[in-house]
Image (cartoon, rainbow, N blue to C red; front, side):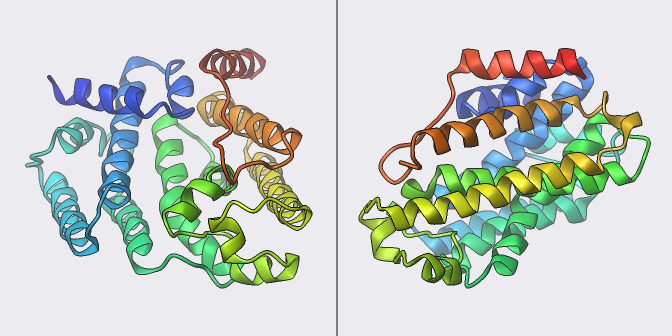
Length: 277
């Protein structure tokens, strides 16, 4: 299996909504974004699948070294081997890849966030930076596009947090800020015990409105001249915003189930967005 094939398999197996937007890219950019996504999956799985935090730290340290090795020209992992040819072409900076690893390590250091600024810092590391790197691969003429992409990445992560509240709580992680749980009268125990209530619905409505506002802010930053090049991000936004609508329509029953869109619907939303832009 070639490095590109390894990354393709990793991406397809993840079942991510992002995959559907990659299909519309030219081959070279598609290979680059697929390698980036596979990298994110590898380091994320290092933490999510770890039963021993100390072992996860060792693995993340290995990835830090591997990223540095890739920039020196001698990567050893299929993912970094697939990424290497694209580093200079799309101006992918090592500091951004290392920042993603920093974000994964944050999951080992803390499982609660006191307030939104703290959560936003985490979201920047695991998603905002990914937005910047992705926009670089998609192509842009106006530097403001990077600000759009960074904010869009934050919106995606806020959506993931809303969708995965129940799954995360069962793993002992609560990303919803502590002060906001208190504001709406919802306890950590409520989340861990999947206790759905009107208070929980109000909390989730608040979270959803913030995420939707973040999408609006991001899209308002996208320069007109780069809209066509950035269509993959717009496709992802269409899919994720539709997911938010579905979660709201379902009454925010995310504590004991994972609400998702069918592959066919995701593909339809991606195609519709591609045609419109």
